[in-house]
Length: 110
Image: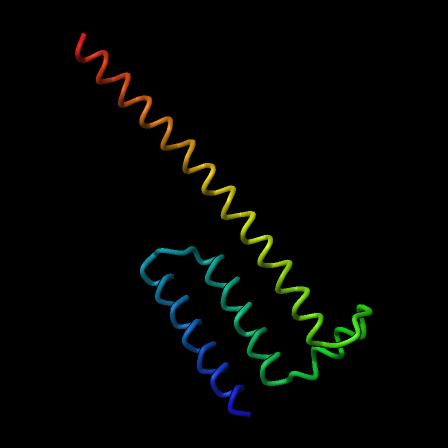
């Protein structure tokens, strides 16, 4: 029971941070909706933990907590993949900019 209270408080904190990021135009409306739905789903699971067992039985997983762990690991791998792709793109963009600045300086010196 106490853990549920702490988790609900954390979810409220997380949703408020998402809302503030949207208000400051750091994230888009689509991201706001995505993260808000995600945190409300987490809240639902926190309030009704037996719901994970029901869904786990539907998909053929033994326990609800196992299903949550499987989904969490998959989401983390996907998010790491997206971050790596973004980092790679940023590195390529920086390389292009540095090359252009270097060539511009070289032309200016000649």
